[in-house]
Length: 247
Image 1 (cartoon, rainbow, N blue to C red):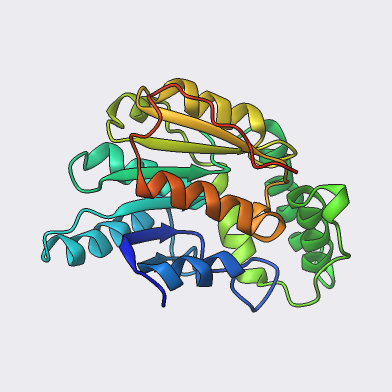
Image 2 (image 1 turned 180 degrees about the horizontal axis):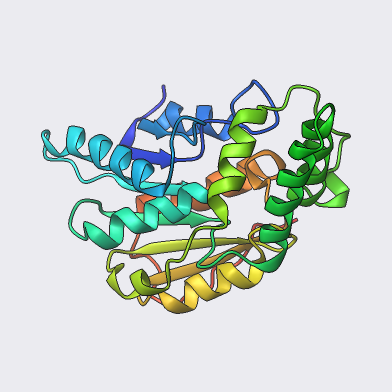
């Protein structure tokens, strides 16, 4: 029998840029938690739209007296942080996976490359997808380029990544927070995860040996960290660096 734990609002966990199948971690979370997914659909014009959708999801739970955990991945972690900074009492804890404060140089260059390949016309989008995949996964988990990439979604996400600047919001995140960095993340970068950890006073930190595509590369390891944190957000004091899962 599966025991359902507290509700979770996940941002960016339920859609995949490179496949028509959602990442397995979305299904695993839904087995043990009432889960509301806020995904990075191509129809969302900017972060403000995503923050608004998080607000709607949390409000639906608040009517039942529930303060959910908020989990954000990639661009979704940026939106999750924005929401929590503006609504400090609305949720009970926050997890930021492979996030960033400001876009690093390679992220901006990749978005620029995507734009140039789109402008190239026939076949350009395919070149862009391959370029993005090379950066999202680290070499050991590279399994050849996908043939079913969600090109509109990928283009939309890349177009918004370069506009993020969360510098002025970190001091307003007061609830227990877990920052998950990926040791081989060439997109958001490990350095940005460490800056998030250092900039949020009530944060804990853990690193996973994966590229930016951690949802596909290390879903069970990531789930273990998220489940432990959501179950006991204050188990470790602020500033703690958690041990990674054994190899």
